[in-house]
Image 1 (cartoon, rainbow, N blue to C red):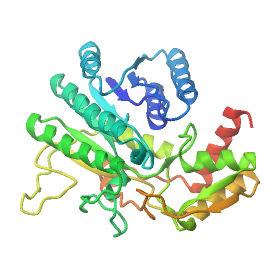
Image 2: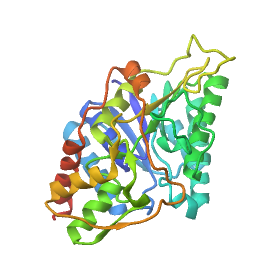
Image 3: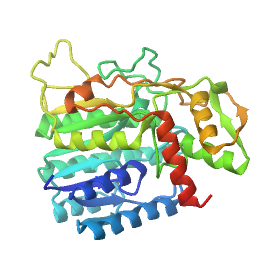
Length: 342
């Protein structure tokens, strides 16, 4: 992989793990992040310090730029200065529930910011744009497993709507300017260096402190938990396989996941949906402690179940996520104990 890759959200959970693996492979990285305070900036700074240390050890360039995606001039300058070969857009205002409280943050980062990335890719002849979408786009759908061929026109949160919008924006640039774009709908990613607002992190922290954990929808939740190393392996393969037009595409019966343009959409998940209570049980086993539980109603904007049909991605890149919940949870808790010295 002799190329320069620009990765937005490089201090985030997925961006950090992807950057780390690419540096190990000898790929030069320009990492972009605004280090906002949506969650503990110290964790983001620790990720950055780790990347810089690995960069020095491997003698592979990792350049960090503290930039907001919605700052058009700054993004234009990044593309002008570095002229990246490929771009991976992982930066976004995350969180379903927070989108109800602070919708403007999602409009600025996820819509205006993504538009600036598309413009940079267009004007500097980027070979391939890979960007993060989300399983949230499936919204009120109940047919399982979720397929890229399904309609996703009924989002139940602004976060989901912003991700669906990204997919539409990307298609426009693929059509008008021939920009190859691949969108990945991530399904509940977890693992070491994870986000503090996600279930595994919250549950582990509270159980170790003897605090009560909140369990929504009275525990009747199912998630397609996907381990971070499987996500990173998939991402690297996708980066290397540029989106192409679907030669069999029919405008009479359009397939939402592809196009006559160089545009692709894929689910990226474990395809093994797990009951939330089973997941919590695995955390309790690994910690050797029982959780104090508070059962609550479903939260606005949330969905009771996710389940990814990932056959299209597996056929595209020749890889299927294979990390078990037991192994994934154990790896996270090992990291958590070491990082926080618990």
